[in-house]
Image (cartoon, rainbow, N blue to C red):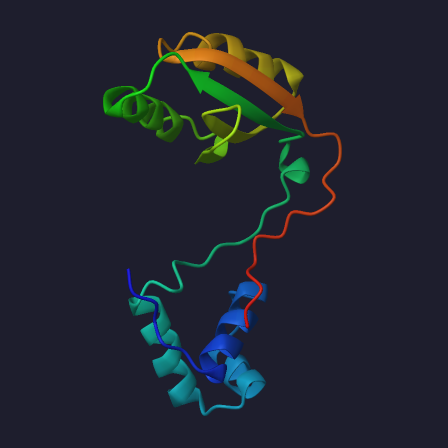
Length: 156
């Protein structure tokens, strides 16, 4: 995939939008020193190129009753496209898995899960994850405190 060529205005637009995706075009244009029409065209081009994938509100999990976050390391019994596809379908079917990564190191996959409490976590592990035939080993850590959870990118 080829990188989109961007200038300082594009970078400024991206930086502003990743901090506040609900910013109006007028406010964005003023912030980056462009006319509203130029800003709108650039924003649309960034969206069309897939540089901006979408907009979403950041919700507070604790205030919505999702008080438990865990990091789960998973090892598969064997490897091959079919086994990995099966595991990818399992991940896609479980909304409590917020992020999933195929990784190098001592685990095959890292899962970031959000659940209401320890009972829901236990249920997820024992009724959903461990019964999967392709899963050989599961190791998990309960997040006690989040020190940093910033998904924005540092732009040049």
